[in-house]
Amino acid sequence: MRVAIVFKFEQPKVATFKRYENTGTVLPCPPISYTPDSSREGWKCLQISFRGCLLYDFKSGDLSLRDEPRSGRPQVLNDGVLKAAIEEDSSLTCGELARQFNVSDETVRLHLHRLGKTFKLSKWFPYTLLEVHKRQRVAACISLLSRHRTAFLFNRVLTSDEKWVLYEIPKRSRHWLSPQDAAPHTARPPMHPRKIMLCVWWTGRQVVHYELLPTSQTVTGDLYSQQLKRVQQALRQKEPALVNRKGVLFLHDNARPHGARVVRDTIQQLGWEILCHPPYSPDLAPSDYHLFHSQDNHLRGKSFTNEADLRQALTDFFASKTPEFYRKGIEQLETSWQKVVHADGDYFED
Image (cartoon, rainbow, N blue to C red; front, side, top):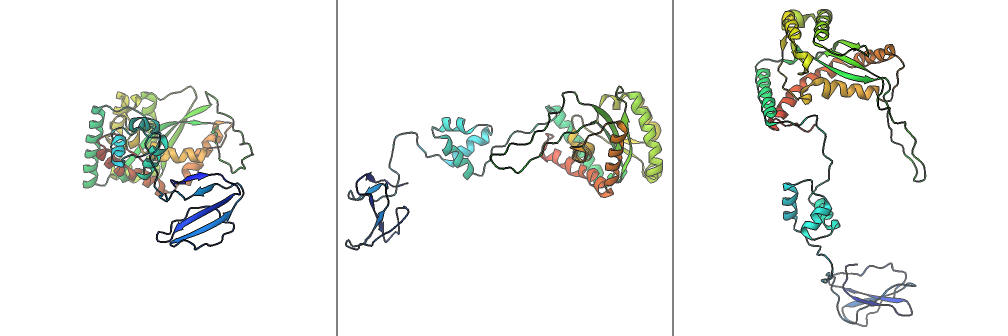
């Protein structure tokens, strides 16, 4: 208790508590029985019988509730100075700040809580962006935003990407248990799980075409060129207006096979226009931030014994999504472009 008084043990175990009526200050203790005594003016004495209770002596006349100076490290810390320190280096721990200001860890923690601060783990990003990469991202996004304001682009966008899909997708779930209950076990996935490469092309309305590559096959310039020709055939059936009137704005990343000469020639023959995509920018790829994220949630916890079952699961997933889902993923590009500009080309928080 924050009371600077002298205490002692005496027999019988009776504690006398005094309260100053003008301030209403009461020394807390669980009252069991009391008898008022008004022998002294301005005071009320509460006699409380409690076996083993500490006896507080007021004979010294010191009734202050202030903490007196004591040995040990000081507990006073200026919030402004602390805020300036963490703004300079937000990764400092409570222990490091405590040593810097010669206070306890708990004091630092309480002051940080008062400032509304929480200690968050840093977020993984796919690449370390150099200044040249940031400038490229800003320039590309400004150009795309300017073009989008003059002519609506998203109803013409066709985007593509590749992703490994596992045959067995483990899922760790949380359980409501009693303290004495043991948590259920979940087998750790193997270091080299069985997987297959998914290649998908989609618009703001639907998935136009997708392929699962054989295990021994990888994406090359020649293979990607042949895939684009098959996508063109699928577009003629599912999106004829996009092919015949609007024209395709093709958005894909800068993977090496995508930039091969044979691919560039094929895109030119198909009459598609490539939409600018800056390097090292998975945060600007609709498949990465939208389609694949939802796909992972859909497949998590499922197991497939063969390619046919996995293919059917993907078909069912793509068909279950409404045009609104695909439209939202494409139109989110505008917000992402704006965030890149505001972040000066750096990766942004979702």
